Image (cartoon, rainbow, N blue to C red):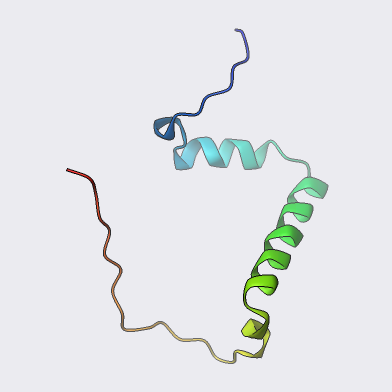
Length: 66
């Protein structure tokens, strides 16, 4: 099989993402976790001050193109 790069959204299934994540070493997974944490803290520095987070009563509306 010839390796290829795909840019198709259809190929980004949860299963494919799980296989990709499982292919990472523990060090790579930890680096990814640290990167996500840094990203969250850069965008919302006050998130660490939140205590006893609760689910909001708001709904999420998903729009699809007809």
